Length: 205
Length: 205
DNA sequence: CCACTTAAAGACAGGGTTGACTGTTTGTTC
DNA sequence: GAACAAACAGTCAACCCTGTCTTTAAGTGG
Image (cartoon, rainbow over all chains, first blue to last red; front, side, top):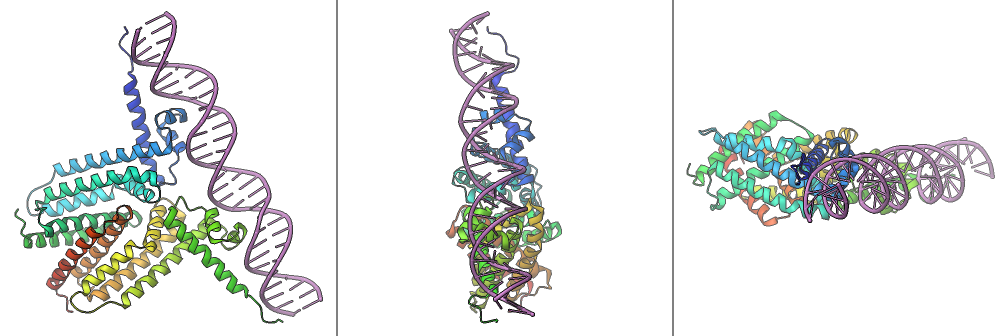
C-alpha cells in the first residue's frame, strides 16, 4: 500500500498557497502595490523562492490569486457582519456602520491597491474587474436586504447605490486622513436622510 | 552687455520644468504610480536625463512638484467650472455635474494615484497630505458657495460633506468601470434628495 | 572680453526585481 | 520497493531604476 501518508500533498499545497496569499495581502496593505515584490512576499511567508515559483509561476499569477483570496475574505467579512445586525430604529445606522467598518478595514485597503493598480495593468484588470463586479453586486444585494428596501423601485435602488458610493468615498478619504469623528457625523446625517427619503419613496419596513 | 539675451534662462527653466511636470502627470495617468519611472518621464518630456536631474535632483522632488502642479490644475479646473454655473432650479444638478466631471477627469486620476501611493510612502505623504487638505477645503468652500448653503448649520454642512464624499466614491468607481448611465442616475436622484433635505434644513436660496 | 554661474547631456555604478534553471527531498502509484 | 511526479530550495543572469559624476554648452555681469 501504499500506506497511509503522513502529510498529504494536497494539504501541504493548500497551506503553502494560503501562506503566500496572506503574505501578499499583508504586503499590499503595509507596503502598497509597488512595494510588494515577490521576493518580499516569499520572505514574509517563510517560503523559499523556489516553492513560491512552483505554486505561482509569475507575479501575475500570485496577485491574481491574491485578488480572489481578498474577494473571498470580503465576502466572509460581509456575511459575518450582516448576520449580527440589530433590529429597531437604529438599524439603518447600524448598516451604515457595517459599511464604514468594511471600507476602513485592511481588506478594503488591499482591494483599493489592486483596484488602482489594475487601472493601468491589463492583465490585472482582467482578473480584478469581474471579481469587483461580483463583489459589488453582492454588497448591493446584502445592503438591500438589510435595509429592507424594494430594489425594483428606482428611487430606492438609487438611494442604495448612492449609499454604497458614499461608503467607497469615505473609505478612500480614510486611507490618507483618518478623521473618524467627521466620518461618524456624516454617517449619522446620512442615516437620517436615508430613512427619511426611503420612507417617502414608500419603503415598507 | 549685456545685450538683450536671445533666450532668457528663466524662461528656459520654466519651460523645462513645465514639460517635465506635465510628462509626469501624463505618465501617472497612463502608466500609474509604479509605471512612472524618472527615465520614462524624461523620455516623454523630450528632456535629457541630465537636465531632468538638474531641475529635480530626486524622484521625490519631481513628484512633489508634480503634486503641486496637479493641485494648481485642479484649482484652475474648479474655478473655471464654478464660473459658468447656471441659475435656476437645475443649479444643484449642475453643481453635481461639475463635481462628477472633476472626479472623472485625468487630474483626479493623477491625484488618486498619488493619494494611494502616498499611503505607504512617508515622504510622499508629507507632500500630498497638506495639499490634499487644502484642496479639500477649497472644494468644500466652493461647493457651499455654489449651492448657497449655510455652513454654520451642522445639517447643511454635513450634507455638503456627504455630497463630496459621494463624488469621490463615484470617481473611484469610474476608474475601473466607467458606467456613465449609472452615475447619471445616482446624481439625478441625489440632486433631488439634496434640494429636498437642504430645504428642510432651512436653506434660504 | 573674461570670469562665473546655470543649463544640459550622457555615462556609470549600485541596488533591487523577476523569472529561468538546476538540484534535492518528499509523496504517490504500480 | 522502484519508478515517477510533485513539492521545495536556492542560485543566477538579464533587466530596469535611481542618483552620482564628469563633461560640454550657454547665458550673465563686471
